[in-house]
Amino acid sequence: MDATIRQLQRSNPDAAILAKLRAGQYREWQIEALAALGNPLFGGSQVPEWADWDVRRDLLQKLPLRLTQEFAILCAEKALPAWEADYPQDKRPKAAILAAKAHLRGEISAEECRDAADAAWAAGAAYAAYAAAYAAYAAYAAAAAYAADSAVYAYYAADSAAASAAFWAADAANATGWDWQIPALTSLILAWEECP
Image (tube, rainbow, N blue to C red; front, side, top):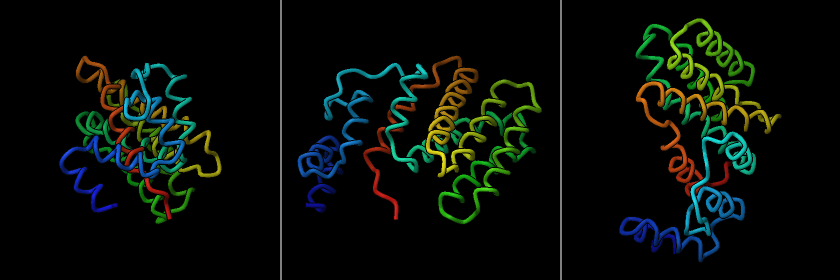
C-alpha cells in the first residue's frame, strides 16, 4: 500500500491523499484540522478567516504540541529576512530559531532555549523598525514554544509567531502576510508522523 501511495503522490498529490484517507491513515485530529482549514478532500467548505486571532487559536489548540512548535519555527523563519536585512550583525533572532530547533531535537535544555528566546525579545525591543521587530518577536515566539509543560503557552507562541510573520510580510510587501500560512500548516498536518 505504501508503494502505491508514493506512486500516486508523484503523479497526483490529491489522489495520494485520498488513498491515505480511505486506508484510514489519517488521525481524527488531522481530518478535523484539515477540514477547518478548508480542504475539500476532508469535508472543508471554505477557507477560514486566518487573520482572526480566535480562529487561529481554536485550530492551533487542537494540534499536537510538537506540530504547533514546528509551525511557530516556520513562521519565525519566514519573518527572519526582515530582521537580517535591517540588522545583519544582530544574530539573536536567528539564534532563537536555532535554539528552538535544537530543543525539539533534544540537544539543548528548556532553560537554554528560554535564554535565546529572551535575547530575541530584547533585540526586537531595542530597535524601532517595525518589520524587523516583528521578525525578532516571531523568533522569540518560536523559541518560547519550547514549553512542553505548558501546551497552551506553546499554542499562543505559535499564534504570535504566525501574526508576527504576517505583519512582517504585510509591512515589507504591502500585501497580506497570512496567505502562505494555511498551505504551510496544511502540509505540516498532512505529513505529520508521531514523534519517537
